[in-house]
Image 1 (cartoon, rainbow, N blue to C red):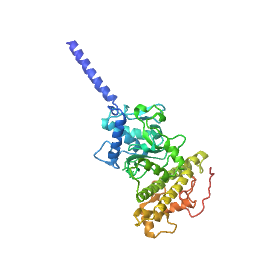
Image 2: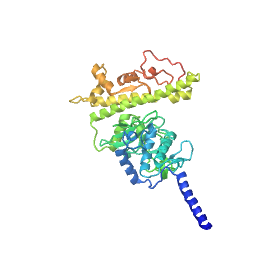
Image 3: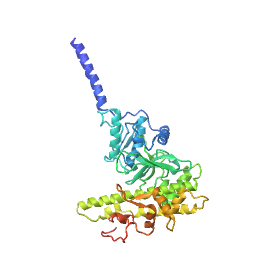
Image 4: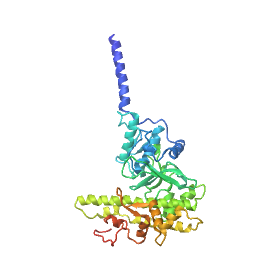
Length: 415
């Protein structure tokens, strides 16, 4: 009888131990499939059809509902969510521990149900990663190979998720913004508003996530790796219109109509100008932090980190490139809305007030994040052309956008 009781007791203990261990060391999710070309195509189809603006604001999907995100968080989440839903591995580099990874095999959330583990894991990945870490978890691809599910990364600045390739070869994008918050994603019927410029290190541009089995391989050994976009960008002198023309030609099934292109470029122009507010805001925030410590002027390193001379030159060149397109295609029988906006933006003479009002309704440029302080697009173009826009990060807000009434006199050393 004692042997029976002892055997029974040991059996209960063993069963308890198995149950306890399986709970205590539960992975975020168990991988049942392996990434390959077939799963990449399914991923592309899923992104095109399921990765929508309201993905994180849909109450019918409580696991993802009101997930707080910025641009990089949303980009990583796109790959993570698909990996979870189809039980594929999700593995990225750990930015804080060289040589280590972050994966769905982690067991730090074993006390939660699977759905809560996934949500906790999403938050963890979001807190650990950034637009800078995207350069380590993705690799550059050929322009004629861009697919839904690929991304555009501008480290320390922004990232986009590519969600569709139109018949005219336009890579449509979605993105989030800062600060982290539950929000709808922005869908834009246009290419990302950047041209890859990191010619030496190749850490920006159009990129694809590294498959988990290849995470230890160098970027050049990834399937489909290509650095052609960096060479082409340099060849066209980082001209956004010329560069995106090359992509559209490579991806498109038919030529884009001139009027549709005008609208797309105007949208890009508006968004690119608004992106500058991120840089301006960061410089203003840095100045506030310096003021608390009793400093008024930035060091050489800080100045180089927060000044915007190259970006401001590109912004000016962007305006000129869009203007050239408009002037080449402005002789239509009927004036369409995009043409009227372009006319109001680029006309040398002051447009009628009604046309200016229409243009401002289409686009105003936010001068700093979190503030309802705007500058009209036409005014910004003129300020750039006249040299009034200041790249010096020590300059006050109005001077950064050329909205000042008096000439700028630097009170700190410039570099």
